[in-house]
Amino acid sequence: MTALWTSEEAQGATLGIPGRAFEVNGLSIDTRTLKKGDLFVALKGDNRDGHDFVKAAFDAGAGAALVSHEPPGLGPDAALLTVAHTQRGLEDLAVAARARSSAKIVAVTGSAGKTTTKELLRHALGALGSTHCSAASYNNHWGVPLSLASMPRDVAYGVFEVGMNHFGELRNLVSFVRPHVALVTTIAPAHLEFFGSCEAIADAKSEIFEGLVPGGAALVPSDSPYANRLIARARQAHVGRVLKFGETAGSDARLLSYEESVDGSKVKADICGMPVDFHVGAPGRHIAQNALGALLAVAMLDGDVLNAAAGLKNFTALKGRGARFAAGDVAVIDESYNANPASMAAALALLGAAKGRRIAVLGDMLEMGEGGLAHHAGLAAPIEAAGADLVFLNGPQMKALWDKLPASRRGAWAETSAEIAPQLLAALKPGDTVLVKGSNGSRMAVIVDALKARGG
Ligand SMILES: Nc1ncnc2c1ncn2[C@@H]1O[C@H](COP(=O)(O)OP(=O)(O)OP(=O)(O)O)[C@@H](O)[C@H]1O
Ligand SMILES: [Mg+2]
Image (cartoon, rainbow, N blue to C red; front, side, top):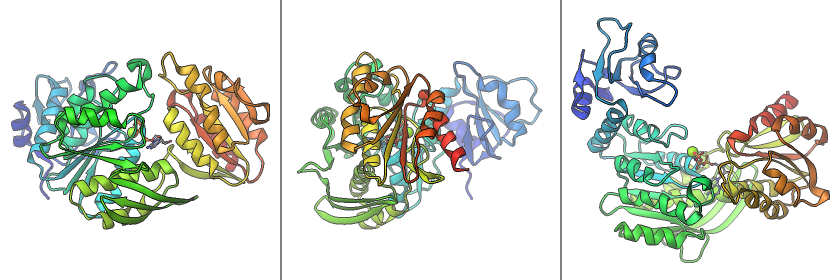
């Protein structure tokens, strides 16, 4: 097996000062998850400096370390590559990994559904050839270069999740990724307090198009109110191929029919004029829409869309993003990972498809800025559409929604998830379906854990 990085290659990429020669097969920035033989990159964060962990990294089996100075306590034969700035060194490795690769590359951004779409692409492209994807939600200033620098040299496809919470961030990150296809999942009021408007969010997401290689394709969600803005921005970035996916007539990848069951959905679609029927192993119209984007990406890479579509049946709902479990005689849809108005609506639609009593347990959506209370109150409409029978709410902003709910739907409201958990448990009856969703900071995991404990 050829190593991911030899010391010579890493030195060539970073122009660092070489120490002892090494070969590494992976990268790590965290000694707790480091694998034997990894290159440990000593990043300096706001609170911690990775240089304080270099010794621990070698103790855990690191093959080498990328540092900006030699930390004390190392043995004489520790393999170090010394650069001026380790963040920059990591980015240099990312750029070199991209430059040496002949893989076809997809970059995914959006206000919700990035990880979901990335994982759908893992299954779709994985059916066609070896595929490297970002781990977890590694989509920020270290996650993107780390994912790129970890790409094996001989894969056929690479899929990278790219995120942002300020202007200029995507432009920078996508300049490392240099995708053949740039996909925007959806535009929604997430991080609104930093941007002020959804138009501004659409513009910031559009920076992803600036990183496309010549002849690359921009993929835009046709059902979004911001579709035309995204298309205009792609054209401004001189993208020749701009395509749409969604339910709207005229979409290049178009949803024709959708049938849902608890363990997935059956989709009929038209992908660039070709009829494609497929099964996705997780229910939800939003998942089907993400799948359309993924298959359009396959088409733009000249991949075999039918085989790729067949791969989607193996996709299953991700932890905290729709994965289900039984809490005794009650079914739980765990959407506790995060929330904004778009993903709340998507999750409530999932609840709407449930049989038996439908119970929504919702926590505050954070970073919503000035219009936050209105966005919380606005959830009354998707709750109504889902036909929720009982609604439990926690967090100060959810009080605005509580005040909008008819008495018949009111379960309870409290400041914290810990206060809501016992009230929810007391209200449950056999056959209920419970949806749990809120921003990570709203600590909805407390409720998920309480439900798991109930199930034994
Ligand atoms: N296309 C979509 N439209 C609206 N909501 C969606 C869509 N896809 C997924 N979601 C919702 O968004 C939630 C988060 O999904 P996912 O983790 O894929 O998003 P993400 O963009 O990667 O989030 P993060 O920014 O935290 O990394 C899901 O649980 C689901 O409720
Ligand atoms: Mg993510």
